[in-house]
Image (cartoon, rainbow, N blue to C red; front, side, top):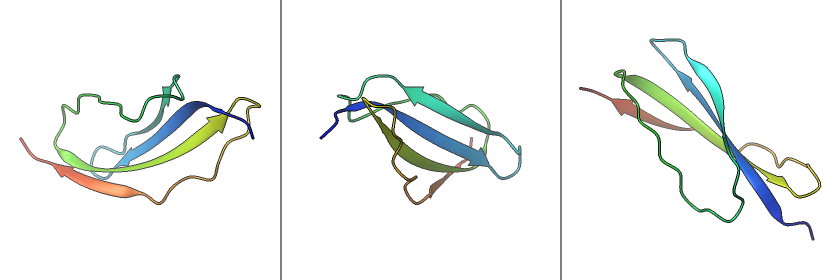
Length: 68
């Protein structure tokens, strides 16, 4: 069984039409934080990448609404 090498966090936003991928290079971490500056509804999914470079299927999206 291959070990997890990294994670990819996918995100999109509703109003700002932003999207991207955040690569978490440590497979041994179980948390990651980043700053969201713009109010919007954001949707996040995650996938794991193993030491052979194989990527899992994406998780279901979870959503959060940020207001300031």
